Length: 134
Image (cartoon, rainbow, N blue to C red; front, side, top):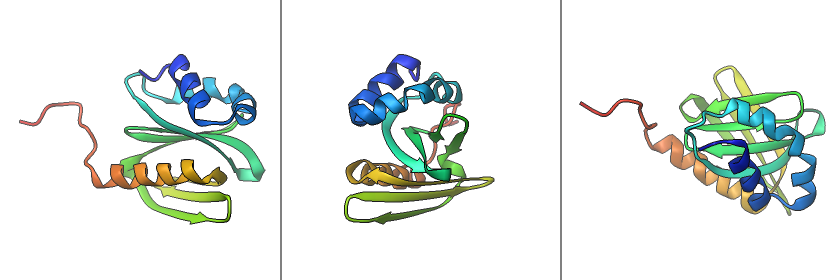
């Protein structure tokens, strides 16, 4: 269940303390964008538009990227391309979807690699449907 408590636990688990405290104000915006039945798989922190700190939340069906005033939810099936690059200590992920783009930089390497793997796996796997197959 993607509720506020689960998201806060995931942020505490995946993001260092200083970044987690800075991004605490973003949590309510992300919870509003998530489906309550979703499971949070991974969270990460990075910088996006105008060098604002942002929170990246990966669920089984979506990627949600949010800062204080902007929330972008990107379903895996709408992703057109994913560009990934690494530098010495940080990584950059640029996700392009139909009508939405999220260019996030300064992500911790381990988190970025895991997010990239989750995206690639989700794009190869068909999305879970609401109705059982006939």
